[in-house]
Every structure is written in structure tokens, then in C-alpha cells.
Image 1 (tube, protein in one colour):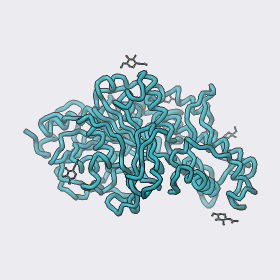
Image 2: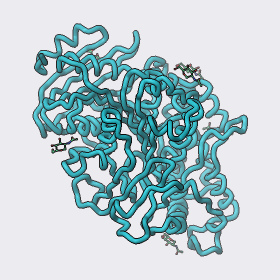
Image 3: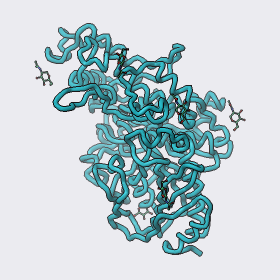
Image 4: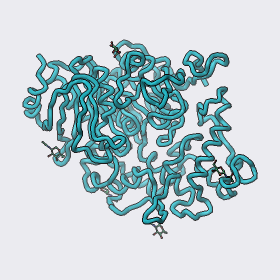
Length: 529
Ligand SMILES: *[C@@H]1O[C@H](CO)[C@@H](O)[C@H](O)[C@H]1NC(C)=O
Ligand SMILES: *[C@@H]1O[C@H](CO)[C@@H](O)[C@H](O)[C@H]1NC(C)=O
Ligand SMILES: *[C@@H]1O[C@H](CO)[C@@H](O)[C@H](O)[C@H]1NC(C)=O
Ligand SMILES: *[C@@H]1O[C@H](CO)[C@@H](O)[C@H](O)[C@H]1NC(C)=O
Ligand SMILES: *[C@@H]1O[C@H](CO)[C@@H](O)[C@H](O)[C@H]1NC(C)=O
Ligand SMILES: *[C@@H]1O[C@H](CO)[C@@H](O)[C@H](O)[C@H]1NC(C)=O
């Protein structure tokens, strides 16, 4: 017997560690106001969301320690497909992922979101002297969501879910991988986008790269302006894009190319006279595309991808009272080091060095760097048949794309598995021309959530939707062989299809067949690189 949405509160309130804030039945298409939403969690400034079917919406506090609670939101569809879907966070966390709630619930999953233990994705106060909130963000929030989610589903529907899934991108990808390492019983299938594993090195890299060009000294001879970076990246694409056979604005695999940056120097005609580089600046570009090493000289973060937008380090000034001052637009570094590493509300990354990176990595606040930093040991998850499905754009400006292949290979080493054995439980899809989690000039739409738009019949299948591909793998044993990515007009699901392309299981890559329409998926084949 299942309960009504109204009845559920009193039952859940008797469970230790749960406190219901609201439980309301909503019809399809209802606009849901989110009055308590902090500004940094308002996607495109919106403080409301829309349901994608008839469902029971439950908001609960979950106690995770004597001094911490997480807020979890459940969207429980009336026409439930029998599955649980937990979702993660982005960036520095702190926002319930409403786009994923809509997407999952729209497909019939009992879908959950979490604030990851704090509210807001900019700021540091939510971490400063709050070690348990640092722990939630580091290793615990998704486990708390999994446990509460399973309990709520059983109470509400009167039975357990048949299968338990997780989906997250960026920080959410890190959270998924960390679940597989620490809590292998939580999920049967884990979907990890642009996985931010070895998170501290990813975040630190923004500071290191900015410092490589003399920042915060904007008059340093090494400094390269944002306008110059745009021109450099455009030239990289112009030069490398045709080498993969199709001129489509996409560098299929930036890790397979190098460019001698001296071509960007003045007198080489690649950049015009107002943008071209001095010899010192040429050397800066050379250094920027070097991988990161720690103070012991070990490589700890792969090179920034050629052709990827450089804003994470090149957008590094702001205007205060008409004066330009150095400040990274990418806020996670300053916020996290202030709140969770140095416990200082005034610290800035202006003097950031490798020592600041290493200090954080050694501290490992809240176990944040377990996933893909300290560990790749998903052996228990593997042993019990769990599946890991990863995807990553090849033009990712925030998490350089080689992070995902590195995690794949290190997992293979840790578990001592061959490629074939790895493919039995862990598959990675690269998406050429996709930025961070979504967007870009490539045929990037593979079933990532799309705000306010359910996928519709044409796209809610295992070829077009990577979440449904994961379900098919877990439940039917059909491992995904290829995915069809779509470029929609205006990047809006449901609009006109401008191009499609086949995406392949790493290490295979998709190659144009040389004859067909390059905007059609069937003109692309998966081949070993
Ligand atoms: C839920 O948690 C928040 C943040 O810890 C707290 O301010 C609020 O009082 C809690 N509400 C209930 C009903 O427990
Ligand atoms: C150089 O190119 C930039 C960007 O296209 C343009 O704005 C600028 O006017 C050009 N400068 C010269 C000297 O041609
Ligand atoms: C900051 O606080 C954390 C506990 O939240 C502690 O582990 C760490 O050592 C502190 N860092 C510094 C630089 O004092
Ligand atoms: C950075 O280091 C320089 C030289 O050591 C020092 O003068 C400056 O105050 C530091 N800046 C910040 C923001 O800490
Ligand atoms: C991985 O974890 C398992 C327990 O789940 C343990 O038996 C094994 O020794 C670990 N492997 C490595 C390489 O640490
Ligand atoms: C896809 O959508 C159609 C029409 O809404 C529906 O009948 C079907 O069950 C959906 N399939 C999946 C896998 O959700």
C-alpha cells in the first residue's frame, strides 16, 4: 500500500535524523516557487522550477552529524518506473540540482537532489570553521541522500526500488566516483559527467595557470589579455580542426596534437598586429599548456586542452570604482581555500603557488580528494556488479578532458583489469566539441538534463540518452556500444536538429566515413585510435 503525499510527513518525521519541511502533491507543469533559494543557486536568475509530471514533492532535512544537516528534495512520480535516481552537485556544491530532478522525474524515476550540506555555490562562510559541512561536501552528502532516498521510497511507495542510480556532472562526477569507492552498496549504476576527480588539483590549476602569466601583475611582460587568448584559441581551432577530416569547428581529440606557440608571435601572420605575442608571451603560452607538477616534480594535472575556452584563468580582472583590479572570475579556488583550507576570510589566490596546492592536497578537507586523488579502488563496487558510465567533453574548459581517461587507466591499474574486463563495468564516452558538462559546437546533447524540457519520444531511448543507456546496461546487460549526440538549434532540446554524431567507447574514437553527410550519425564510425 502506498501512502498519499499528505500522509508521508508524519511517518518520515518519526524516523531518526529526518525532519520534513514540506510534502505536497503537484500536477504536471506546475511552477514551483523556491522562496528560500540563495541567489547563487538561481539558474539564469530563476527562483522557480516546473514539474514535468504528476508527483509528490518532499523536502527533508537529514542529520549527518551533531552539527550538520543536508537538505534533500524528492520528486516522486505518480507513474513511477520502479527506479531510484540520486543526483549530485556542481562546483563548490550547495545547490539542489533542479534540472536533474526534472529530467529524472520526467522519465519516471523517483528522483532526489541534495544541497550537499550547505546553501550556495559562491562564498566561503558555509565552510569556515564548519568541519562537518566540509565533510558533507567532501564525502558524505551523496551517501546521506542514498540512505534517506531509499527509506523515503520504501515508505512512500510501499516497496524498495528495483534499481538504484546516481547521476552527476563535474563535482557531481567526483561525488559519484567517491560513492563507488566508499559506499559500493549505494547504487547499481553511476553516471559521471566531466568528472571532477582529484578535485583539489583541478581547482588549484586555475591559480597556477593565472600565475604562469604573471597575474596578478597585469603589467607583467608575461601577461596575456583575454582578447589575445580568444584569438589564440580561435587560431588553435582553425589550425587543428581540419586534421581530423571534417572542418566543423571541432578539434576531435586535443590531446593528440601539439602546437608550437611561436606561430602566435608577431610577424607570423597568425595573429594580427594588435593581438600577436612578444617572445616573452610566446614563452607564457608554452608554459600554460604544460601539465601541473607538485613540489616533488610529479605530474599531478594534465595539460589544458588546446581549443578549450581559457576563461577559468584568463578572465582574471574586475572593475572596482572605475579601476581594473586582479580577481579570478572563477571563484571556487578563493572560496574553498578561504573556507576549508586556510580558514581565513581574507585569503586570496594572488600569490598562489604549488605550495598552496600541496598544502590543500595533504590536508584533504573532508576527504574531498579520495576520489581520483588518493584512491581509484572501486574493487568492491566492481565485485558486486556495479556499472560506471562516464562522459567528458573534449573542449572542457573547467576539467581538462584527460582527467577522465587518467581515472579510467588508474582504475584499471588498481584493480589489475584488462581493457576488456574494464569495459564489463566501466565505460567512458568522449564527446568532441563539448564544453564542461554541456554546450559547445559539437553534437553534445546525450541526454543531459535540459531545464523545462522532457526529452520527448524521439530522444528518450538508449541511443540518445546516456542515463537510459546506463539503465539498459545495469538491468539488461546491454553495455552501451555507441551513443548518438545531437546539436539542437539554439542548444534547446526539442528544437530543430542541426547535426548528429556517433560517440564511441574510449579508447575508440568516432571517425567520419569520408563519404556520408558529416551531420548525420550514420556517417561516423567507431574505430580504435
Ligand atoms: C533544517 O536545517 C536547517 C539548516 O541546518 C535549519 O536551519 C532548519 O531549522 C532545519 N529545519 C528543521 C525543521 O529541522
Ligand atoms: C585584430 O583582430 C581583432 C579581432 O578580430 C580586431 O578586433 C582588431 O581590430 C584587429 N586589429 C588589427 C590591427 O587589424
Ligand atoms: C582549517 O580548519 C580545518 C578544520 O576545519 C583544519 O583541519 C585545518 O588544519 C585548518 N587549517 C589551518 C591552516 O589552520
Ligand atoms: C604577494 O606577495 C608579495 C611579495 O611577497 C607581497 O608584497 C604581497 O603583499 C602579496 N599579496 C597578497 C595579496 O598576499
Ligand atoms: C581495494 O579495496 C579492497 C576492499 O574493497 C581491498 O581488498 C584491496 O586490497 C584494495 N586494493 C588496493 C590496491 O588497495
Ligand atoms: C519515452 O516516451 C514515450 C512517450 O512519452 C513513452 O511511451 C515511453 O515509455 C518513454 N520511454 C522511456 C524509456 O522512458
